Length: 426
Ligand code: 5AD
Ligand code: SF4
Image (cartoon, rainbow, N blue to C red; front, top):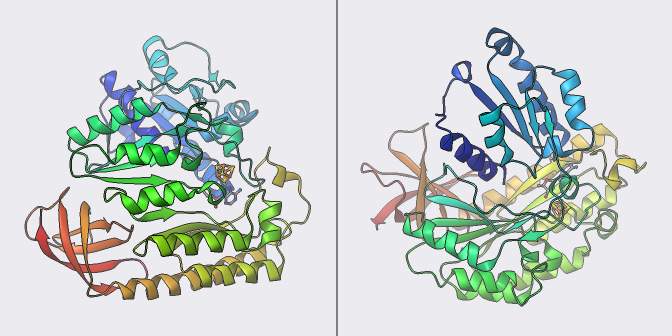
């Protein structure tokens, strides 16, 4: 999400004839696109802003601009200006198009953070940076209010783009040579709920899969409570839709899931995973898991480990819960001690790594179609790309195979990656 939003910010800067620089000492404008999902993300960005104080002093005309989730939090703009008075302009998440006006007219207003979130600007210029993949927003905001999560407060309510506008964008990206389209939304499965017609996420997937040309469709993120049979069917029956589902579980304990306001039980999640695996045997399911949410007992944590054993995710992003001001979780009192959180995250990561390695080994000797998306700088002539089911594979080639579909036979599997040999190039 943030990468794509940065592409939009870059689009505005490019339109105004700014050029990117590798070395920020040469910059005329520095835009920080911030995140506040966890405390660590916020600390990191604060560190970066602090580190350019000297540069701003030596270059008073340098413009330092902040936008993204962090700026949208109540009172945050003033807090930042108090701490870093040399920041020139703070933009909220609903105002990024105002960057253009600011750079043209250099108003004196320092904070531009609006609360209204009803408007979708489909026409922002975009400077894409991730060929052969193109990110496409389909729905903004979130209505779920998971009790740990700041997103609904900083991104507003769900707003779906029109199906036609998404279709046109995907069509033009495929014509421009993009071979992978990743649909983005905080909860893609609620796509269409606010459009008050028959539009659903399943319908969108089926419509986009009809677009001519050789390309892949991916999407993220899915909420388990909204994952319908129609969506499973759309994935199963369209070759263009990748067999990879990112399905955050957050916890394996029904009591913790209730406290998190996730609206599904541990049993319902496991049942959904089994149903998906049955209908789409080649599927790769990945997840997000949190440890140390308020009130999480040792038994709750053991239930999470047990769920991880049962679901056998291809991989998982594992997080330590950190409280976010403004959320319901912030005021809960049954806090898990830091030491306990550390112990649990270590155990969880060890278990998931073991499963990832075991699952990776199963792929050895199988051949996959892979879209080459990057070069591995550590090794000579080594490329990387993903299987349809989302696994990252490294492979060597003497000719340039960037942005091409290749057939690769897997020869080795470690926790982090698979290694393969190129059999065929498109
Ligand atoms: N603390 C830790 N992790 C969080 N996430 C969301 N909010 C928090 C928080 N307060 C994690 C969830 C989510 C992912 C994007 O970030 O697992 O799925
Ligand atoms: Fe946050 Fe929950 Fe919405 Fe995901 S679904 S963005 S975790 S509130």
